[in-house]
Image 1 (cartoon, rainbow, N blue to C red):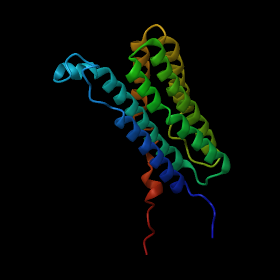
Image 2 (cartoon, rainbow, N blue to C red):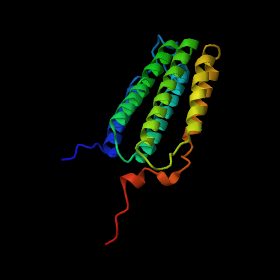
Image 3 (cartoon, rainbow, N blue to C red):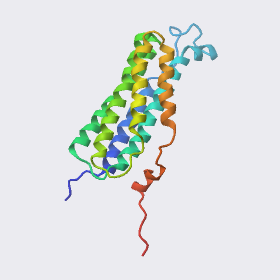
Image 4 (tube, rainbow, N blue to C red):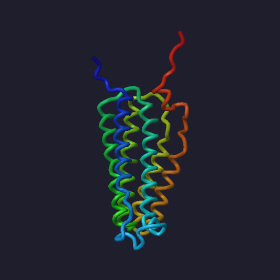
Length: 205
């Protein structure tokens, strides 16, 4: 019996963790009460929680982007080694901090510290994903779907958002949103689509 861990198995485990992360975020969305908003019903009440909803949307998009690119990335790996396993676990741990930071901003409002904390939790998955990418490259001979320059540029915007948030929280969120827009675009090598790995062509008989 082979004890080799396949990329598909690692991908399935990661999908489960990311699904839990998204579920945690949506469960933290609360209907406003009279203590939160003078008008606890109607459009005015919705306006009271609008910043939280916008931040939830931003967090959801970020987690979704990592999920999509994680599929592309693991598809590039031919085998799974010990170092890649731990790099993937560290990435998932860093990604799991996003719901905590999202909840913090929801509880403390868009203050300089809360947004700076949120930006910090955006930096950690970016760094760990870069490390994971390097680990995959050691087990792959295919072209990477995303350039190192794109990863470093995104990391730079996240780092800038940490400092900017201390003075202009809303501008910091714009910087984080720019990163999301950059990564929503499809990868530069669409021929490496994940379906080529999960659904290989069967030879004709």
